[in-house]
Length: 242
Image (cartoon, rainbow, N blue to C red; front, side, top):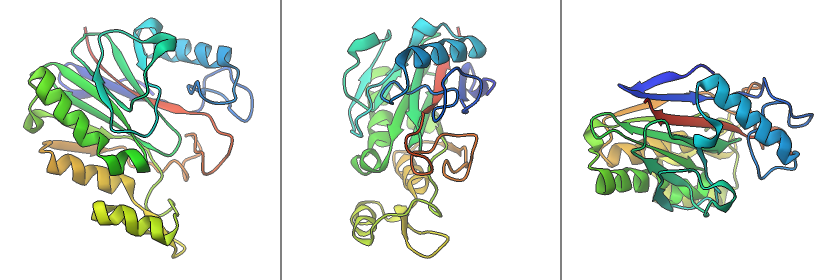
C-alpha cells in the first residue's frame, strides 16, 4: 500500500483490507462511510491510512458516489456536505482525491505538466454514462490538461471472467460499449468494465493507460460486494506531491 509514482510529481495508492480497526464483516480497513460499519471506525481507518501514506487526514476529498457522470473541481474536502457525484479533480498540492470501491473501478488521472489530478468512481452505470471521459474533458477545460500528456490508472474491479449479469443487461451495455461484452469463466453473460473504461480513455485521447489488473472478486485482500455482502470499501488515492 506504499505510495507509488503515477507521473512525475504525482503519487497514488490503492489500499487493502488489513491494518484498520473495523470488526467483521468489515475487517479491518473499511474506508466506506455508507456501510453498516460504525462510522467512528471508518474515520479512524481513514486517519490511519492517511498517516501511512504521508497525507493529512483533513486533506482528503471523499465523494458521495452515486453512479453518475457528474464531475467537479475541488480545492478542499467537503466534509459531511459532499454533493452527489462520481468524479473530482484538483490543482491543489497535497490535496488527495479518493475513490471508494468494492467491485467498481477507480479511475485516476494525472497531467504532470498542467499539474492537475483527477479521480473517478466508474461502476456499471457510471461507465455507461461516461464518467471517465467526462473527467478527462473537465480537466482539459478547467486546467488546460492535455489528454496526450495524461497518465491513467484503472484500479481493481470485478473482472470480465467473474462479473456475471443478465443477458439483457450485457446486451444493453455492449450496445453503447462493445468492449464491455464478456463471458464468465463458467460460460454465462458478463461485463468487462476495465476493458470498457480503457476503451473510453483511449477514445478520449489519453496517452498512457495502466491497469491494476486485480479482480476484486478473486482477490481476498480486497473488499468485494459480490463476494461478501455486507462488505467494506477500499480506496484508490491520487495527489500532487508538495
